[in-house]
Length: 347
Image (cartoon, rainbow, N blue to C red; front, side):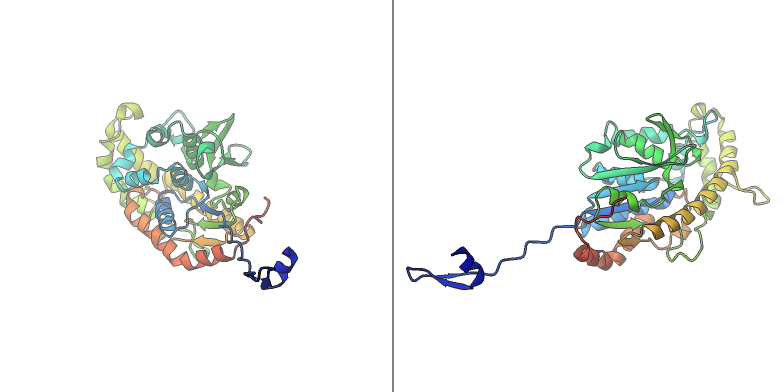
């Protein structure tokens, strides 16, 4: 009888009743696991907030987040359910507040110790561990000396984020599990491969570093040299002089020498480091993305007018991230409908 039911649309029973063999419904297609790779880019990374918000508002909720540098900050806060708090913090930043968060260090291997930023992160993320997050998360860092790429997928969320954004020469490196780590942008500025390794079927990469069409140009950091330095006289008055070890006037001169340029155009140490890192990240990102391309790349437009330290421009940057997702929605939805589920590549 069962074999007949499979072969014939209608079967008459001994009682005269007719059984109709309805065609079997196809099993619903399983939802692809979505991974988002949030790239490095310093202040421009505030646009990551808008990217995630717009994805979620369109029903595309990431299952996997991998972040490098500022991407680790935004990604970690999203994984911990603290994106709204990060957005409020970012929108409230002014040039004055930015410099008040920078604690000058003369004893370490960076211009700033990063202690005040750590304290600020701990207000929201204290005692949170990466392995306890509801979604998979990884922060990318670089090991000092060996240059090894390190994926931080367990342990303190705060320390992982700090290690990932520890710009060499700007912030002191972070010691984790016996290894000194700094900014992951030196090895993997847009961590697509990390998302795939964490199980993503569909990877959306957010690239903030180079020109969106890869025409061989690198976004300059001219804004931080001009407009931001105009606020230093005010900013110096907000910095704790006793903690920094400098009188207020000396701190103003220190910031100018560090972030500005000399009369002959000679860059300060921070400007030189940031420019060099920006160029390096651009070249590495091109190579990595060519070798392991994402399914969808999101590139916010108009980032050239924002400097790497323009953290006070969150309103414009968040809006730029949202607009970038809206432009890419068609591409994302196409890949969601066609990507193979459960056949991710092995790294």
